[in-house]
Length: 300
Picture 1 (tube, rainbow, N blue to C red):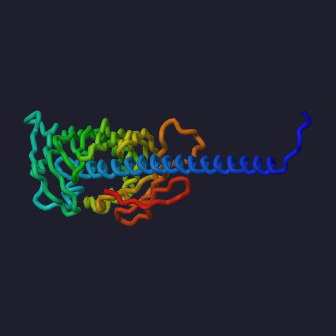
Picture 2: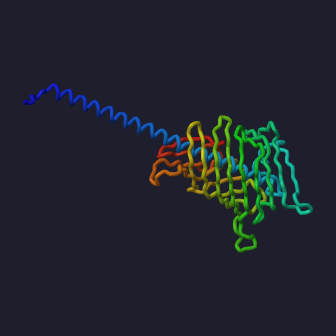
Picture 3: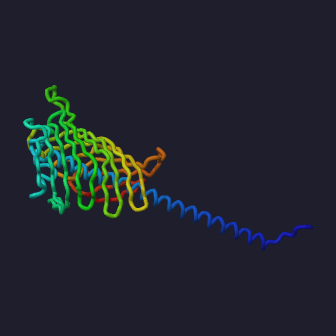
């Protein structure tokens, strides 16, 4: 049989394949947009969770240091900002030796609001091997029913003075190694952040005075963790790419950058979060940049 060319069939076929290509491209763009949104959300959640843990445990460092001159340098952390809170109990564990010392900071079952506006309740328990300003001294902190606002805080926080001996010439700057081990921040809605961190904190201002309010430190190191936000579960690791700057007269990190990347991503993946703490101003604002797009966040 001889086939007879039909122009109408050609038009119909052309329209059919054109429509098929449009639907295919639309679906591809829609799927790509959905994937991008998921990547942005996962990167943002990991960056924000790391920042939140960093700020909360940065405060624990200040609190452990600031209990008194007997164990650290009085007046830092909550001791420079809170009135009549917490109740402080000091126990000498091996009398008549002064150290080790256990210090219990009891905020009570109902808690109290500090001058920083945050409610704390429960107990922070710290054991000191010596006064923290001395090389080799350490302070290990655990928590008993402790809440920062509505966040339940668990884990172990250890400070070790790793300054070189002061009898060397020239004298070395004061330095601390800080390890946060198996920390967990749990929220009332079932969300949580798990966090482990290793940081080196080196003093570069204020070491020549007895007033901690002029002390400034640079923070270097890394962390890793896991975060649950609703149905989303993300595992990430972070590295400080520009030293963080902390001051005892400010409860937030004032400068520096942290890069957070989810585990198992390709090395050249664009889905990396970089948190910028600012230019040195003491405030609770930071910029989280994901794939070149900045997002302003508020720190706890």
